Length: 163
Image (tube, rainbow, N blue to C red; front, side, top):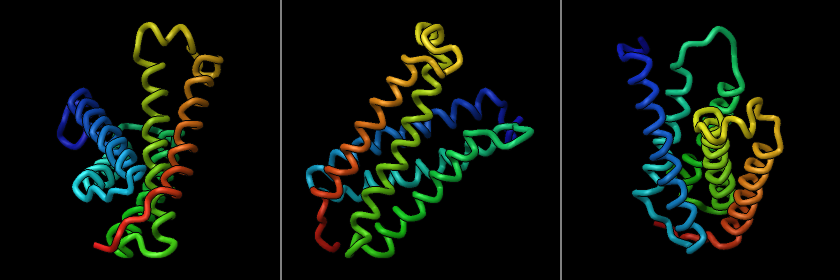
């Protein structure tokens, strides 16, 4: 039991929140590339990403795992993104700080998604049983390149007007 839920139910809830965070994050990234604020999508993305990081700490564990460090990193960059969006309205350097923080937060979620896909999807498991094999590295490398591009393009294109 985790917070009164079976582990299976808690896991399902965590996964669904994570998928909403990733999907809404992709919408927010598309908006950034079109210089659109998308306040509702931004709110959904930021808060579900916070929630997925927080719920990640609810799983039973005996020692800190790499997933915990990803959670700490995600919450740190989300704090910057939330401040930039809601306290500083993307003004001055907060614009590019927001873009970078949002891209990093989404990338961390996608990184974990790729890890989970290689762990849970039957046809991917044999391709990278230890997650140190080339198919896993290629998938993660391509994801990193995509997010580096998104960060660069977002910083160049996202110049929202004050609310």
